Length: 176
Image (cartoon, rainbow, N blue to C red; front, top):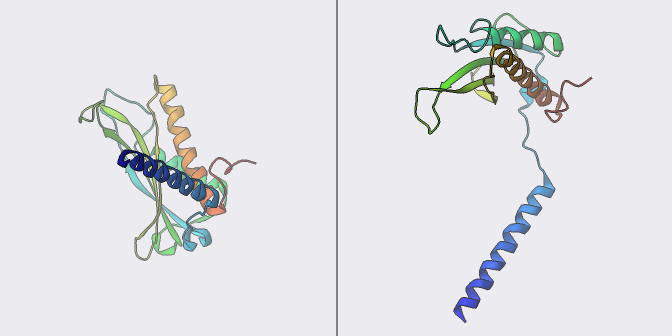
C-alpha cells in the first residue's frame, strides 16, 4: 500500500512539474532592457583589449585591437548611435574585448580552448554594468577559417546589440 502511494505521489509531482513548465513557456514574459540602453543616442566605445597569441602560433591575422576596430566600424556603419570621443559625453559605454582562455580538454590549463568575444554595456556615470554579451567562437583549421570565425563573432556581437536596442530577436537584427 505504501509503495503504491509513493508511486502515485511521484506521478502526481511529475504531472504538476510538467504543467508548470508548460505554463511558463506559454507566458514568455521577457525581462526588461534598461531604459538607458534603449534611449541611448551617444555612445563611447572602449577597447578592453585583445589577447595576442604566442609568436609562432598566430590564429588570427591582425593586431590585438582587431576586435575593437571591426566592432567600431560596424557600429559606425549601422548609424544608430553617435560615437563620441570620451565617456563623459556618452549615454552608455560599450566595452569590447577578445580573449583566449587557456584550457585543455579535461579542464586543465595549458591548451587554447577558443576565443571569447565580450561586449559590456555600462553606465558612464556609475560604471555599473547594464548588459553583457559573450560570444564563444572556435579557431579554424587554418588562418583563413580562423579569420572568418573572428569576423562572424564580431558580427554576432553587433547583431545582438542591434536586437537589444530595437527589441528584435538576434537572428532578425541587421537584416535589410
